[in-house]
Length: 293
Image (cartoon, rainbow, N blue to C red):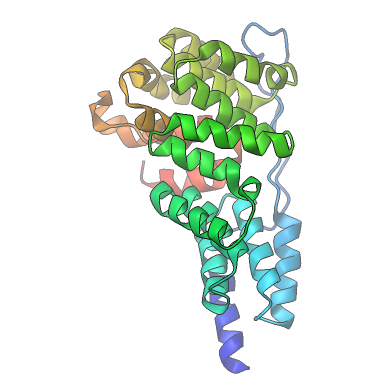
């Protein structure tokens, strides 16, 4: 029993960086470009209550596989891949033939920017009987990150047939933009833009930059970011069209730009600006990565 309690303490340490406090209300943003909207809606982070519930169950019984899976999924919602990996890896030790664990660990490694290992784990989950629809949206992103846009879009479509999800729609739109179909990308984003979805505007900026309209992307950044941050991302928008599909996906989703983008000493900070611009739900993770700027 003491050994199990020590194991649980290790898991709790893995989520020390996860805030269990509700996110503070954010101030109204500037007017969205060419929409007439006065502000952009910012989605609040999810996963806090789910994590609390899972941790309470683990405190009672550290060997609860379902609680470990729920804790891992909650950590994913909170954008903390290291915590998620900790929970799913522990569950994998205890139940190595569990497909749900493989799928969750694949999603955690994807969020930790390891698409190749994520794809391997999704394949294991499939062999263990987990339906493709459970992880299709994440597998689609993994395919985009390795440069396979066609497979990515097949997975996004599969995920969307299961049920509409704004994040999957944004990923799908970006993938369409990467593969050269700007019109289809804009069509996917249009309903979200009409809802004043901030993340959809960020996605549209990357679609424009990838499609050869960096000035349009810069206009969106200028309207939705602090001046200094908007200025730091401009060189990257101008460089996006010259990247490979895999590089474009990594730039848009994780803020990774090749050094050849030409920002020299400002490269890391500007890439971090891109990461924050891409996803307002990644602010805690962004702050940890940007600490060295």
